[in-house]
Amino acid sequence: MSREPTSRVEIEVNGQIVAHDVPNRTLLVDFLRDVLDLTGTHTGCDTSQCGACTVHLDGIAIKSCTIFAVQAHDKVVTTIEGLDPDGRHPLQTCFQECHALQCGFCTPGMIMAAASLLNVVPEPDAEDVREALEGNLCRCTGYQPIVEAVLRASKELAQ
Ligand code: FES
Ligand code: FES
Image (cartoon, rainbow, N blue to C red; front, side, top):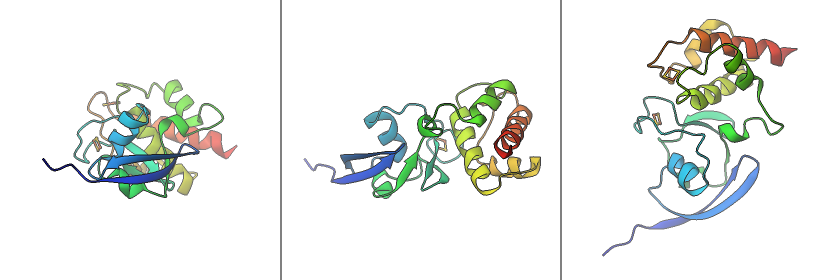
């Protein structure tokens, strides 16, 4: 019986270095959820379509079902749990205030994608937001409150 090869990974996750031996084919989303118990990152399609698994890798939004945990070795990963080390990020507050939480399942991924946008484009317009979120699917009520929430958060962050 052949055993799946494993590798040692060291990753900075939400400000802390974690080190684990993981099977080489472990997806980053599964590592975050099953090994580190960071279940705020969700698994939706598992095929890079929905965006529910979005996290930041070295500050850039990526779909964590599209890379292996070993590919995050020596890199910095931020999940929804670590987005604002001081508490609640303005995006989280604005999603609540604008009724953009909607189903809640896709929300962490939406917020992580939006946060990545605001890191690069602090004052986006609605078109910028829609473009940044085009990889994050909403199948329930639509994108309008989500776009409004991101725009409101950008204004609050700019103050
Ligand atoms: Fe990763 Fe859907 S679970 S894109
Ligand atoms: Fe999650 Fe619409 S807000 S599917």
